[in-house]
Length: 465
Image 1: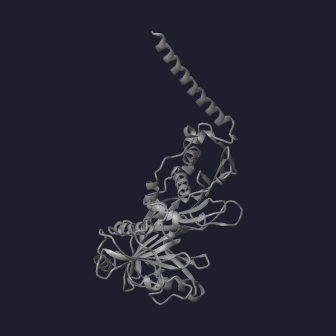
Image 2 (image 1 turned 90 degrees about the horizontal axis):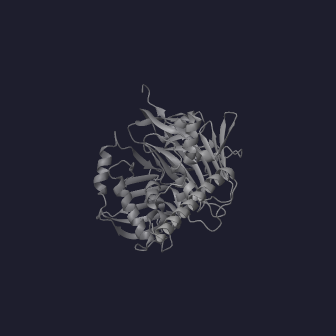
Image 3 (image 1 turned 90 degrees about the vertical axis):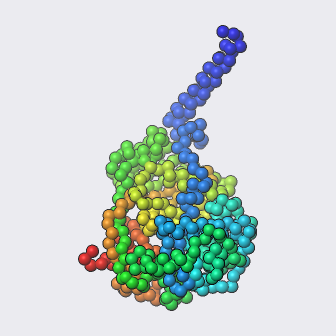
């Protein structure tokens, strides 16, 4: 063997020994010195999962409601499994991209929102406030090049002659209405044909709604575009759901693996009165309670360098995706709220959606503050990591289908609630979880009042069902 070959072989062996030594030190340090201020070889030992911006946008940039108006005070909520849903939403995102990139000018409009939503077109309520930076990130266009308001609602008013042309109206969170000139979308669905089909199926397939303003019910403080049912038939089919604890909760080993994944072996475990299990490692604390409530806290310092909302949202999404808790069939997790907090971190709220209908949460938190968890998942995140999480974990199953009376005025009267005593901001058709006893979920109207509280109106099951 030549001298040169021997030297090369020695170099390779020395390099291999160095790498092996570093890995061994990293493993020992991870287990023995949990309080270390940094993670040695963190990319090797981290549970961090890789997701693309596009994957997160596809999962989270979806509307809370997509509604079709025929311009004659009839409205239909288009579910995400409807054949026209994606066409309508593609039209919306294409128009928003033109606005954000400056290819469609946005100006303040003098028109009133209640008059705008009475016209023929597409109404979208995202359910959370889109600040300009978040809108640009969701669209993948970058930050808007023109002044764009924070908003959650918009309408595309279709041209009365050209079906591929519409005017965008955006309602800012301060109530100001903005509009564009006409925007063309060549792949637009024929709205007239769609509304004819929806009308034809209004007796048994597509539930028809009115708006508070169109039904002349709204008081000055009510939201004019809130939807309610007055049409026949009186009873409509809805799913009945079960909301159970995660399957992993029945076994300590499965539970730890579901929460911690491959990092399970690094955590110390403590059990308190059979009601709560705590897992700790360094600055990370997880607490799982017997009612399915998971709390996480990071005790280290937050990122003070300035957080971009897209980076924080990616971290929140990774945290949820990295927890192996099967949610049940036809169940999605939907982004419901976005709020910038002091220090630059962002707080996100996520909710369950089962078979196209939201499950609202109003549950006592575990921190002793007396506050309510108002979303199934609350996450505080910065540009580096998740700082806090509160998560009411449930696994859903569709049990059966029954017919229910979903008429707003009849349900209010049944509960003895006077119309004049409540200022309506939003009306949802869905389900709710307010206590650990809520395991069988039947449909309800959930009214969000202008003051922020909710009113829950259980639908009335048809007799004999």
